Structure formats: C-alpha cells, structure tokens
Image (cartoon, rainbow, N blue to C red):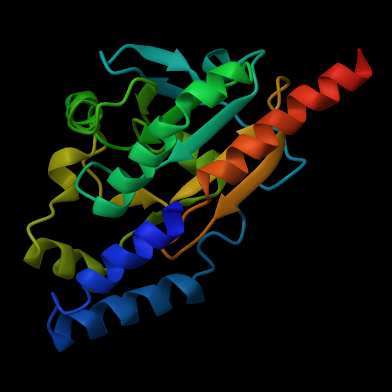
Length: 222
C-alpha cells in the first residue's frame, strides 16, 4: 500500500475523534497559516540546500552540510514522534532503506524534538537511518518551512495532551511543515515536497526514484 493511502486510512479512522469545537479551531488555525503565507517561501528544485547546526541523537552539534556532503540524500523534516502521520512516514522510509543504500544514497530525518525524544522515536519505529534535532529550527527556517503556532492551535494541542514546549529542544511552539527534499551530491535540491496539510507526504517511492535518477545521470556522464 502506498504511504498516502495509509495516511488517508488513518485520517478516516480518526475523523470522529474530535468534537466540532476542536475541528473548527483546527480549521481556523489552518486558514490563518495560509493567510500568513506559511510555506510560500520554501526552497524548491534548483536551490542549494542551506546550512545550519543540528544535533545528532547524542546531542552532539554537527553541520547539516557536513552530514549530506558528497552523497545524494533524502531529507525528511517531520513534526515529532507524537505525530502518528510522521511515524507512518518514517516507517515507510525505513522499508525502502535497502534500496536507498543500493542507490549509493542516504536518508536522514530531522525534527525539532530533543535528542532523547529522537531516540525514543527511532527505537519505537525500529529506524536505522540517521535522525537529527533541528535545535532552534534554524535549518527549517533556512529552508523556509517553519511556522509559529497560532494561539487557537496551541489551545487545541494542549487539550489533546501535546505540549511542544516540553518535547522540542527550543522549548517553543514552533514546527517545520512536513517536507521531503532530495539533494544531489553537491547539495542542490532535485526534488521537493512541502505541504501545509500534515496528513499528506511525498511518496517514498517518488523520492527513491529521484535518487536513482541521480545515479543514472552520473553513469551517463561518466
């Protein structure tokens, strides 16, 4: 089953979980973010990936460019281990990791959560690819995919028991939009997918196809 079908099934299953007031608050918050133009400035195909300091799962600072340097890379920005849609996405990418390795590429996942939360998400989903903390969401800012929560949305999340200030390294009510980028070995974006709708993600098969295309192009040039 394709990832989007799995995500749609989850959305359908949980559709009746929220009361009308909560649903209205979510809709109003989404409309507010659209009005603010969130995601409109996101980097796209042809742009060079920016740099920022991120942390590995041990809390050790590393340069994003150093992590991706010289290798075609799939980069997944996800909201956190508390998000069931993100967990489904991460597991879907884990399933194709052998094919990514075979294509001489790499896969990394980036979240604003603290390193211990990153580890918990990794262990829960049995992930074996690199996971990093975007400490102050500086990398998400540079990619143009970060946003601050509207007050209504903070209230909704608190009512659901989700406290981003407790799990995010920054302590802020701030997240990246779910986004997937495929970078070539020079760090140039060759495929991108950014969406304000957190229930929708790039198909891992599409990211893998873009990665394999890089290998085929390199072979033709050689």
